[in-house]
Length: 492
Image 1: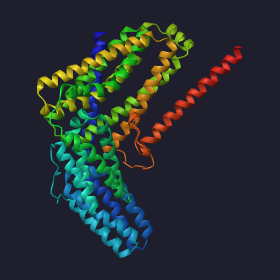
Image 2: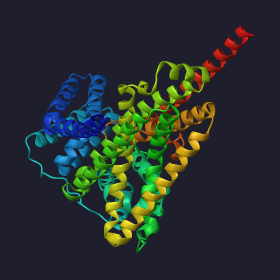
Image 3: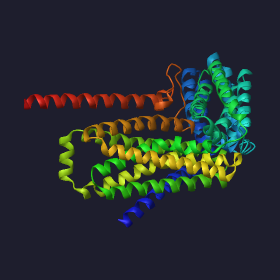
Image 4: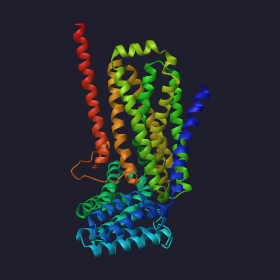
C-alpha cells in the first residue's frame, strides 16, 4: 500500500509536469512570426478580391483574418508590444474602411496592414513587452485610470494594450486584494474579462467599459490605502481558498468511511499531499524565478484547465453519489464489492480528484501569502497561516464526523448536491480563467447577470455549459423520481 501511495504522489507530480511541459512546448513549437505569416495569406486574398471588385468576398476574407488574429495576438503582444499596437491600429483602419464600403480605401488600408504584418514577420519592430514586472496596488489602479483615459480619448488600440497589462500584472496584486476582500477580488477578476471583451468587440461598448473600470477603481482604492496586515488577514486566505477543496476531500473521506474502505483514505490523503507540495513548488518557482507578468497568463491556464478537469470528475462523482442514495443500490454495491472493492481504478480517481482540488486552490493560496511577505513580519505571517490551517483542520474534522452520523440516504443526497455545486462553480470559473488567458474568446452579454457564488459570468461561453449542467441534473432527478414511482406502482 505504501508503494501505491507513493505511486499516486509521483503520478500527480508527473501530471503537473506534463501540463507545464505541454504548455511551454506548444508556445515554443510555433513562433508568433510564423502565426502571422500564415494569417497574412488571408490579407493577400482580401486585397486580390478587393481589386477584382469582389468587396463582399474581400470583407469576409478579412473577417477570417480578424478571427485568426484573436487566436494569435497574445503571442505578438508578448514578442513586441510596439508591433501589437501598430497591427491593431491598422486593423482598426481596415474595419472603418469596411464600413465605408469604398474599394480604394479598403485596398489602401489592407495594404497598410500587410506592411505592418511583414514588418513584424521580418523582426523589424522593437522587441519586448514594455510592461512593469512587479506593481503595487496603487500602480495597478493607475493602469486602470490610464486605460480609462485612453478609452475616453478614443485611442482604442492603446486602451486594449493597457488592458492586457492590467490582466498580466494582476498576479502581483491579487494576494493584497484577496487578503482584504474576497468580494472585491472576485468582482475585479470578473470585470477584467468583461472590460477586455467590450474593448475587443467589433463595435466596442466604450461607455459600459468606462463604467466598469470606475467600479473597479472605487473598489480597489480603499484597499490600496491599507497600511498594515494582521494575523487574521493572513489566516483568512487559506480558510477562504481552502474551503472548496475541503468540501471535495471531506465528501470523499466521509464516503470511504461509510464504505468501510480505509485503504482508499490513503489514496485521497496522498492526492492531498501531492497537491499541497505541487502548489508550494510551483508558487515558489513563480515567485523567485519568473516574474508575475510572464506567469500571468499561464496561471490563468493552470487554474482554468484544472478547474475544467476537476469539474468533469466532480460531475461523475455527483451522479454516482446520487445513484447510491437509493438504499437498495448501496446495499447491492457493498454486497458486490467488499472493502478492496473500491478497486484501484476508483481509488486512483479519488486521489487525482483530491490532487486537482487542492492544487487548484493551493497554488493561488501560496501566491497570495507570498504577496503578503512584504506587508507583514514573517512571524505574524506564519502565525496567520498556522491559524488558518488549524481552523481548516477543525472544520474538516467536524465535517467528517457529522457526515458519519447522517443516515445513508440523506448523506448521499447532501453529498451529491455539494459535489454538483462545486462542479457547477469549477466549470464557470475554469472557463472564465481560460477566457482571461485568451484560450477562449472573452465575449460578454450585458443582459446576463454575474453570480460569484456559483461562478456565473456574463458570457455565453461559460453560461451555456452551466445551464446544460443544471438542465441535465433536473432531468436526472425527474427520470429517477418517475422510475421510482413506476417501480413502486408495479410492486403495489
